[in-house]
Amino acid sequence: MGVKLEILRMLVYLSFPVGVFWVSNQAEFFQRHVIDRKREIFPPDNPERRRAMAELKQRLREGKGTQA
Image (tube, rainbow, N blue to C red; front, top):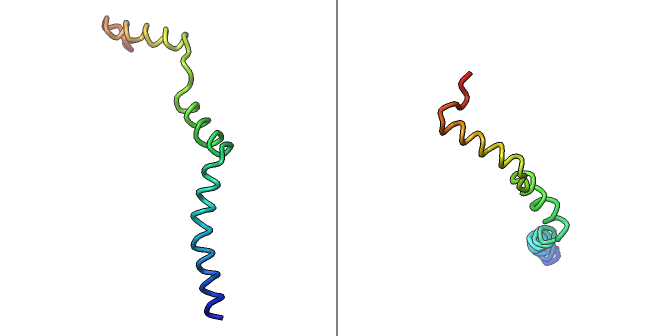
């Protein structure tokens, strides 16, 4: 009984990190959880947003920023 229990424990101890490593290195997992999240946080460049940001910077430099 003792040897079988030790073999089972060793199997569990070794299979968990190997399983996590295998799952985290799947291309679909990486695409879904890392690349898509990065695109969500840092969206692609938008020329209209860039123009609006330049206009806001210019207004702030002139002192006409957010004053009503």
